[in-house]
Length: 296
Length: 296
Image (cartoon, rainbow over all chains, first blue to last red; front, side, top):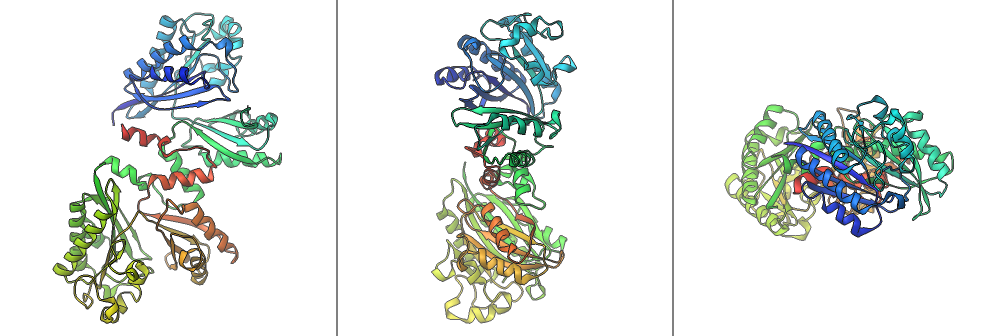
């Protein structure tokens, strides 16, 4: 395998199809694997892979296009966000190492600041300050609170101006290991219950390590959702996350109606799910037929 | 994709490693994907893929080697068997059609009969008589009953002599769609319970369509096992099979301690398992990252 980076860029439009399509089109200098839009979140995750150079260029072009087409002053959605292009994480795949993902994040962050006038915070493995590692901290205050945040000396951006881009806000650019965006839908419209469950299952309030969680409302379905990032799905598998959500939900008499993996997921995460629920003994990823047809 | 056949050849040795290795070695003119030996069954499944020609040649060479090294008069094992090479199924993959698998089965069957002196029954899609479609019927009586069976005009073999090969018995050669060999281990040494569960879950006695099942004893673990073939795992998914076994086991106060997929399994079978247990909404096989890296 060659050195590949993945980029799972999140932009703040999940409803208007022509705009979404135009933004995705701008990523074509990399290999676009997937794009997943959510109307309630009003947000799209576009996933593309390629060499570090190709992925960096695609991330820049997508941002350039998105700031032309998205006005954050008009944006409403269930998911926290601070910019037209909200987060740009680079993820090492194959033989690429984290250092290459970090280097690419710095390079792209600098270009967004210098050439597009967007304030940029580096986050997670690319962070320059320990208090910027956690994306939730970086994004706290969201688009509406950006002017105040950027004026605070502790929140001076890593690149770009010390004030929000008027229509595009700010962007978080980072490097991280593969995370899975995983949402669980509840048979209640009570967002308070989803928030309470989110608090119970997320790492920082005493839940599962590697889990970040929010309670949000899916207006289109009239259902509350526990919206999560499992930041190391190899160590904290999805079955454990789902079953803990289910366990916490029972105290409110609430059931799980479904769940959702947003975008792509590594094979080993799916295999681990099957391994747990089927109680498989000694099952290896390599027993999946398609892995064998590929390798040799 | 080109026209590929898979062959999941079963031979009657699962304990003596040097013999197993020598037999597997004979398949190298195809691409050997997997070999899985079971000591209790005293049986190995070797899986190889290639063009119809390569797979046919590998199946012939493996049989030639196995009849040199295995004496069925000495063979004991939990799994029903009638020959040193017990079954040779050919399975279409990629763009290959069932017709090519059937043609290859006929060609290989003829060579085993003519060149190696093994009586051959064609089974499943390759069967020439409707009563030979079901492998269990073909194999009934096992090695020890072969002389009587081959003497019965209704069980005249499709190829080869009308008497057993003295040390290698007989071989079933067939063509079929992808099946998954799936075993469920119980926390009881009572084989009667495993047999009763097998009877409850298998198609022909009123259970799940596409499931064949036996109750066997795993002496090495002192546990009974429901040993199954799921002959169409795309229509009868593994979660349904496992949960029905579990349901039937509860009437005896017996639990499932684990399960086992023997050999290889198509990705979509694993994805369907995750889709069910995680209650995934709208999850496609193509969301598995590795499928994307392969296709483009």
